[in-house]
Image (cartoon, rainbow, N blue to C red; front, side):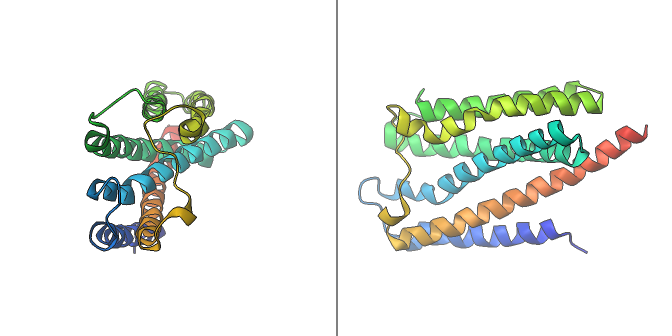
Length: 216
């Protein structure tokens, strides 16, 4: 019998295929960027969900520090693993967009730099977890580090408004053609569902590992 997260992941996969098809073949061509803009239909949802996943890490970290309940540490572990996967995808998608748009694969733009800091920070926390054997110390140290690392998340989102940046600011919903809005919204829901699937799977793996550790 499939667990609930399997059905969630399957629905997300179907929706991402539908959204991607509509973004590639149905949505109109963007006036200034042309067809390269079509990566927006997966890049923007990936960016949104990556920030949400690392915010879930923050919630789990605060929950552990406050309640010392293992479910919160499981959330920290599951969301860090998933966030790093989506963060890596975000960086690759950004590079694919940047090359034809800006002429370079990478530049030390505030948005790109803050994303790199975000990914490296949580990668460091994952490394920390692998080096600490005591489950309580591991949970506490990584939770503390996660709270500190999360401080960068609002900056990642807002830096293009606060600072001079090559990266465009967030487009408001009312400024979009409805034919562009639909595939973007579908893909956003799809990527979120896929992320929930991965977090839930990693949560269960963490729960089993922690049960074995505490039983020893």
